[in-house]
Image 1 (cartoon, rainbow, N blue to C red):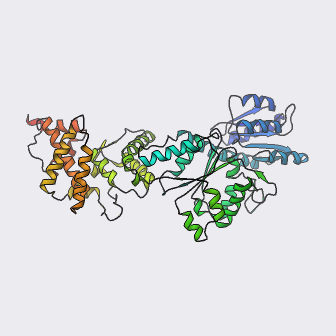
Image 2 (image 1 turned 180 degrees about the vertical axis):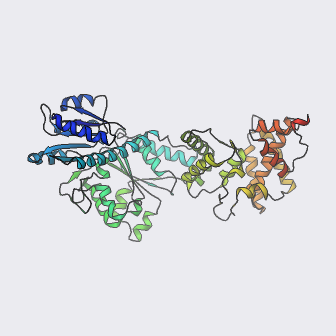
Amino acid sequence: MKPVWIVDDDDSIRWVLEKALARENLVTRSFTNARDAMQALQTESPQVLVSDIRMHGASGLELLQVVKSKHPGLPVIIMTAFSDLDSAVAAFQGGAFEYLAKPFDLDKAVELIRRALEESLRETESEQQFSETPEILGQAPAMQDVFRAIGRLSQSNVTVLITGESGSGKELVARALHKHSPRSSQPFVALNTAAIPKDLLESELFGHERGAFTGAQTTRRGRFEQAEGGTLFLDEIGDMPFDLQTRLLRVLSDGHFYRVGGHQPLKANVRVIAATHQNLEQRVREGLFREDLYHRLNVIRLRLPSLRERKEDIPVLARFFLAKSAKQLGVDVKKLSDAALLYLSSLEFPGNVRQLENLCNWITVMAPGQLVEINDLPSDLTRVGDVAAVSAQDVALEIPVINQPESQILTSCLQSSISSTLPVDWHQMLESEASAMLSSGEPEVIVQLGKIFEATVIKAALRHTHGRKNEAAIKLGIGRNTITRKIQELNILGVRDDSEI
């Protein structure tokens, strides 16, 4: 955390605040005038700035203007004498976080600085998360359409409505729209309107004045003010309370709003991007969503495909999430076997990309080996729709006998995959075989194909090592116990231990 800057030409004020904040384990840096603080802002910045309003030379108001031009999200607390409250109000309207009237209660001053620090740290964390967010991953045709849309909208300030199922990555798209826009150097602020209680949502959006309601001990900036000059992302807009929809419509219409309990209109220079997983047209018909707000938001609609519409992206997404999870935990990256990838690509993933990411986090922590097989996956993985749930134990121990003709066709197909150059039509052959099994009503097709795949690859490895089990396990990247178990389960003959040679 960066230090708290104290700017005051009164030695006693600086000394008192320095000692009080030091007892709270907070680092400080003091300046005797505003000019020195302005000079320091050229190369560094504080977490919170506390400044007197009247000093020799430049005033606290001038310093406030410089801070807001360079660091609009930096909380500034203005100290003022009771006789100068008009100037304090002017500072407050100029973007100060709060004013502190002299003489002040030291405990209350520290508490106020603490609140300013909390808000500053929240905004800093949001900015770091945004800067670390990667470009959206995806090679599927449906995602290419999304990328093209982002490119077309990159230089526009038009309102965008992103639709798509929960977990499909709507906020990631909103961040990409901001990142590639002229507003990219300004804040990106996100608010999930469904996650905030109705009584607090208005204050979260528009802020509140001191004393506006019980518990409002200080004035608070809302998300519109925090996003000034940048982008405000309103997630789950379909769940916004009806009365608040009216206030949002007014902001989108004329660009002005009032804090809760306030009488001074504030101008909002913010691009709004909204998102929802709901059918807004249906909610309009049901009287739950304002039609005029719907048309105001629905200037450009961007539909994000579900993960089951882009299954070809599951392998690249899984590898990315496994690498990300391993980096966060400081462990080696785990790898999914081809059979496990094939199995994952067959799942419906009702939670979409978020569910896949959570699964990869589980694998990083819980999977026993570096190479993850089907039976290493969590036992509660389910198939969505009419397909029965298949647990890892089912995959490993309850595999039905496969018809001989189908086995021969797929085996000949999969054996060729051991070579470094795959046949061009390998995936087509696999898809054709799967289609034939599905058409004939075969049960648990993915389980049957998984067994054939594993048996074929292990047999090829054993032929390559002349039946040496341990050597085959090393070449396949699996453990000795794993290959021993699979040889027994798959009834693979002609295997010997390396010790027999």
